[in-house]
Length: 142
Length: 117
Image 1 (cartoon, helix red, strand yellow):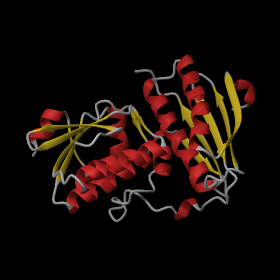
Image 2 (cartoon, chains in turn yellow, purple; image 1 turned 60 degrees about the vertical axis):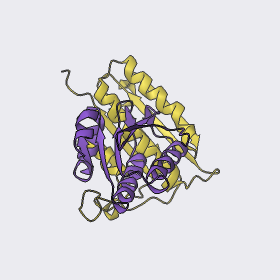
Image 3 (spheres, one colour; image 1 turned 45 degrees about the vertical axis):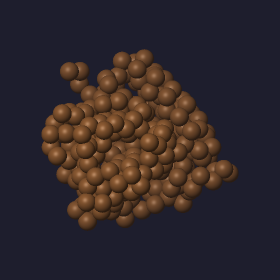
Image 4 (cartoon, helix red, strand yellow; image 1 turned 90 degrees about the horizontal axis):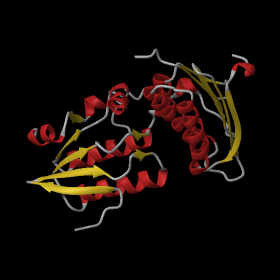
């Protein structure tokens, strides 16, 4: 989808603090409400965005005050696209263990990526692993 | 009785029923505090039977799931038991996708959870 097809867009560079991401997250979710997105879709985007931003801030930038996270969002009435990029070294997606494997079920970490993939329509990491694109298609009206 | 910032703690017979004060369990510091308060119930106060009532919770992140998993281990290590209840559908979906619905004993409402002990 090209930029011209978005009804609403935002582009923010935030410091590596979780609280710095809240305002951007709330603005995106509020805009979904304005565009009449369904409750479950809003929940899905909230969850995926939270997990991706915590990954970027905590695991990507290691809370480094000199590093930033770029958040770009484009939204129409039926697609939301959110791109999140940190300044870390990235990671190998293939090396992330399956959290639903019985051996990992009791591990307190490692569920964020799986939740993003389950609740969003598409999740794509760049090769380095320091940028993720989350896309959500609007669910059919009930 | 200790004061809790993140929890409301009540006794129903010999069962400790816990409600969450936060609607959204996301912020790092709050999750840390929440974890400490939950662990205190088990490790310091030696409560054996816990019901966690999620009726006020409309969002939680995977970091919060991590605290619940650690709590579950502590409860079991203390020879206790724990039930969850009043989980809204979207949050139940989070438990189901991560298969934590197999690890945790999830009941429909508080009455069911209490009756399960």
